[in-house]
Amino acid sequence: MPRFEHIKEVAVNLSGSGLHIGIVMSRFNPEVGEGLLSGAAEALQKMGVASTTLATVPGALEIPLTLQTMAQSGKFDALIALGCVIRGETYHFEVVSNESARGVTDVQLATGIPVANGVLTTENDEQAHVRMKQKGYEAAEAAVELANLLKAVK
Image 1 (cartoon, helix red, strand yellow):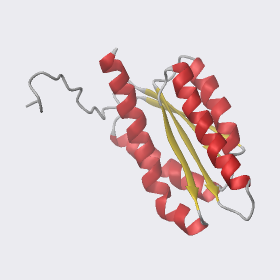
Image 2 (cartoon, helix red, strand yellow):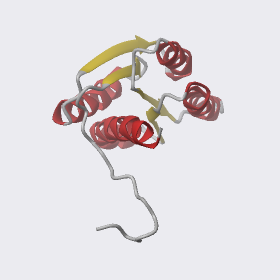
Image 3 (cartoon, rainbow, N blue to C red):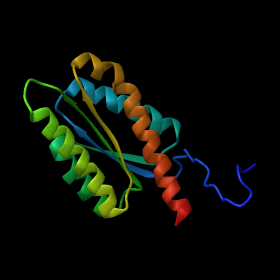
């Protein structure tokens, strides 16, 4: 039953049937990257995603360009960015975190292909390890949900 009679609500759809998902993963902080990927892979399999393609890049700043290229290829319904930026002793953390996030957002707005941002930004290794699998899982769910939502509202 709808919440309001006069509002048509688009239902959440987490079915991956027929969807083609691309993942771009940073190789920097490889243990965390693999943990993120493990969570994403589990979710994508559970949702029945038709196919998944993984591309790896050196670090978080290289993620947006690869996402953009994949989005422009026309081969993917949604994309997932995976990586981890851990605070260090310099300002570099802020630059990498902010520019990576901006780039991920710019790709989806410029191309119309949803991009789930699964790039962790943490204070230390412990925080990253605690969050990695769940964040990867949630990013995969977001990618599938947005791919289905955009199809439903077109």
